[in-house]
Amino acid sequence: MLKRGDHLSFPYSKGQVAIFFIIGLIILASFIILSTAKKENASKLDEGISTVETGQVDDVNLRSFVQFCVDSVAKNAVFYLGFVGGKLQKDFFPKFYIVDANYRIPYFYYKGGSNMPSRDGFRNLILAKYMNENLRKCTNNFKAFESTRIIDSSSRTNVLLTDEEIIFNVTYPVSINRGLHIKNLDQAYSTEVKARLKEILEIAQTIVNYELINDRYIHWDYLTDMSNRNYNITAYTQEDNTILYRIIDLENEIDREKYIFQFANKIKVKE
Image (cartoon, rainbow, N blue to C red):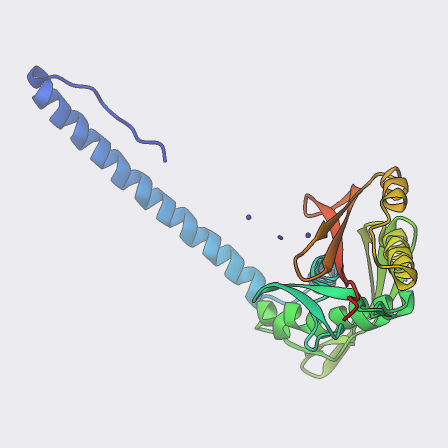
């Protein structure tokens, strides 16, 4: 869970220098003509983009722009939750297994205690919160529509987990100020991310529950049973009595990558 030149050669002999020189001039002239044509076409493209940006903003285009951001932020929310326990302004989890400065995996179980939130905690405190923290960063004050005054306010998000997907229902107030007329856009947006997160959380919770009872060994029989549901589940032991669990959903992808969910458990060692 991450995440995006051919060389032309012209063989010649010593007796073909003059011919080669003429061919070189022809190629040079052709290159200049081609470069000029490309610049003219690029200028026309820039003018076309400028016309779109400086023209009157279409309500449908503006909503499509917001929907694109909702889709993108939702995918990032699900990816970061699975790969590093979320990427919020303030860490949700109290403890992490440190891989390096930019790569940390949250502890769901730590020396006899559980740090794993409830399903509602994952939905509201990590996924929905990520959407609310990052949606306005994506729309970026609507600078893509700089000729029109657009006003927005903070979003509110409700996240649902089904057997096959994560659904984000977002309320995001946006209005267009056209002089004396203010148009309020439809505030409701929705998007789905394909991943079996609901079942993955159940698997992770069961692993934590087993270790609350006895953390002296990895429950391979359970991991094998769950792997038969088209998951790739692995456990890696570390030198500091940490076990890293990785669950890969083999049925779903985010941006052409299989969905990965991982967490750490730290075994309690008797002193």
